[in-house]
Image (cartoon, rainbow, N blue to C red; front, side, top):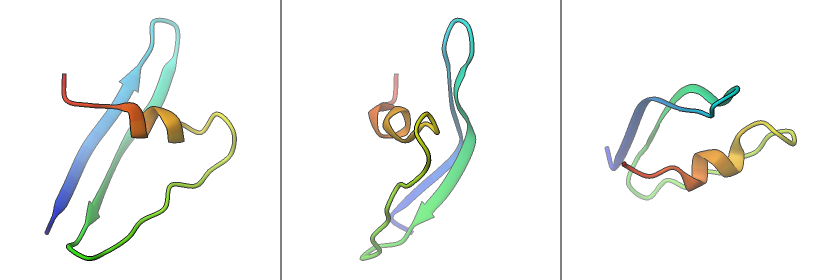
Amino acid sequence: MQLEVHRLSKVYKENRGLLATGFNVDKGQRIAVVGHNGAGKSTLLKLRKG
C-alpha cells in the first residue's frame, strides 16, 4: 500500500468542513476527487499534517 488515510476530518469554528473520511491508494493507482460544490474537495486537497 502506498498511501493510507483514516478518520481525516476538518472542523471550522462554526461548522464542519469535511466529515471523517478515509481511503487507500495503491502504488500505480490513480484517483479522482469529485463531488458537488461545497462537498469538501478543496478542503481535502489543502489539508496537511499539522
